[in-house]
Length: 263
Image (cartoon, rainbow, N blue to C red; front, side, top):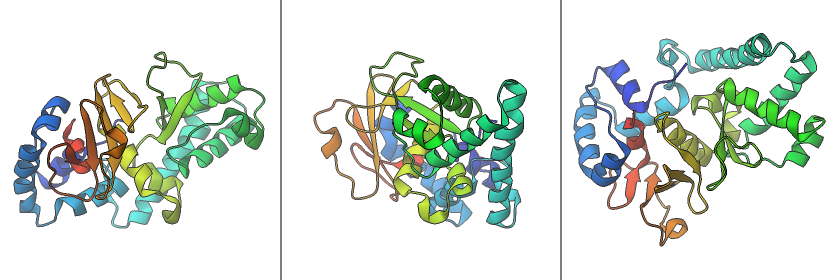
């Protein structure tokens, strides 16, 4: 199930009328869009950044705020992930054995608390007692098909290639709450995972040589906190910073939350 964007979350829960913004428009006019959105969000009596924190923990799924206690939502999400592995995968791939399911579960656990996960196939195979690279690639494909992870290839890699996945992310930010202990959920990883979920399905995104993401072969995005500078994207055309914990941006510094309005 496709989750809610941050824009849809605000509309669904607070009745705001907030149109989606194209990527090119957002990059060019982010100061104007942030100003207009903040004016509307002010009617909720809650700052945009506080809304954003709640969304990252339990707002991606439409049912997230139906639970009075966040712990109950997290337990439900854990059960959903477990059902995907133990029921849905065998239904789609009847040849998967119980031993394979256990290895896939361990693989997901290894990835979840080390996002963005840079795979070392030889090390992973030894750790999980997987016979060969082909089987490991199959397991990663199963997890991606189950919408539990998102695999990113390096800039310049052939489309659809599984030879060298460069980074592996969780499929959405709420999964970090379900699959990692709070002290293990890394804020930087959560930021990058969020930005990936913001991009419309037709977007071509890969791991950039410089910066975090290369979008549609044109735009480079680097994600970070308020102290992040432009050093990593210096000299790159069409390069932007997606900055967490700020309400307004300026020039090529854009509030991270605003990317949640791309869909």
